[in-house]
Image (cartoon, rainbow, N blue to C red; front, side):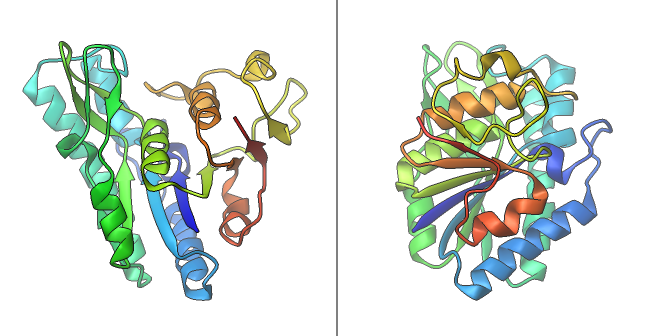
Length: 249
């Protein structure tokens, strides 16, 4: 089975402070991944992480989002460099625990056409999996026809990779225990966006990619079942359970 795991930017960074890593949270996530691989609970694993206070901060400063682009090379390089820095932190923590993690930078491979349709080739990811590696992707800037560069969210990267490699399971590790209804309770299952639209808001920190609403929309488009859960449930997800909210399109 192939598993795609998204580590939310709000989980592994402090999104209220520019380029601030949440070291203990990242350590805990790396521990869970290493333990699951060592136990054989997961085999073919792809990790995707969000931008958190790294990418989102610079994207916001330059006015770049998923829809608003920039032809400024300095802006593109600054956003990408921030994401590479965060990616190196994630890789380092995984390497410290013996996880054979390798980077995949979407800026070098992905693009959008004039209609904003995304093309993110995944053959290299499939080959990496076949060679025993754990590919680690991230949110990034991508070339966008007619717009210069725009933002590729980690959520979009999850969708493209999950579809490309034929993922069997997808997990979104967020800062909340699942999608919450108006009463603050976890919604156990979502089959349509309309059913929970009134409960979904944007992110509570600087986020140029859509917050929880964007996550749910992205997951509903997947063929594989996807779970949204908090950090405390990461081990359970990697062990094969479906904690938090299960999203089935």
